[in-house]
Picture (tube, rainbow, N blue to C red):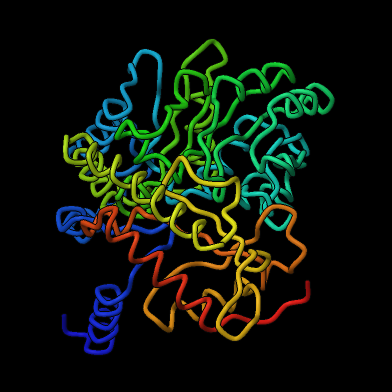
Length: 404
């Protein structure tokens, strides 16, 4: 690279990544093959439109790349091309979700999605997102006792509110979701079931988490979390008489964006091929095992784990109201301070609100941990036990006093 400033920054970031223990639940490490495709000459080609229907010439090879990505996406999740369609052009997860709403929800219509503070995503109808500005969110949360979904209550809410779409799949919910029950919730309200499986897509592909496809009408996902691909997104849609697939394709292009990033699509295709391997299945299973150990070890040391544990790669920890006592006699640590203290010691997490959080979003009561990235690096249960020990020692050694 002839740009010394950017080269220096890239090298510095590579060094930071190598040295850090990465517990960011939405991050992972891609292979050299994915990076090669992402940095390829495919970035030079403008490909507005869809395969066989481009608005520019010279797209014969590009069409083959996109079709191959489509084939691999359907094959990975064991979907029939006669029953399912997939759009591989969305640039990222947020525009993918908004494209689905644009196709399926009338302006001002209702989206029934989990509230942000209970584990939902901004694009599930939150007011600061475009999804909450153009449509109306019917927010739902978790049971205050079990800290898990109460499907009977959700069903009653759907009947009362009659949303156009019910969104399931979350950004900070560690438990397995009963997709069949969520389908019942949606049908009770006359709604479509949209699943955002961004966090668990790789676990679904590897058979380590229940698949939403037997029950969902639409499934969206990013590709850079547990799926271990580049930053991109996919929209799967069930083919039926409603022609939802055609509506969503039009919402993506020309509704949301112009020419797709073909280098990105090629990199997704590489990641999908990798995810179809036996080694990836072992990776997905190990990712869940490691998260179980992380949650159990922290819980044993007095930290409150939201819902009591995890069924995925994700662990949500209440660092503020946990019943621990540090060496200075204080109690818990607010999420922002917990994140900062861990980062100083080389452990990267993110501060995160917990359900029914009384602290502000900028300084919430918890942290969110994920096992996917460090599992990619080869870590196993014994390693995550040591990580939990380090987290415990760091936070207890520098705990902040709080009122009881």
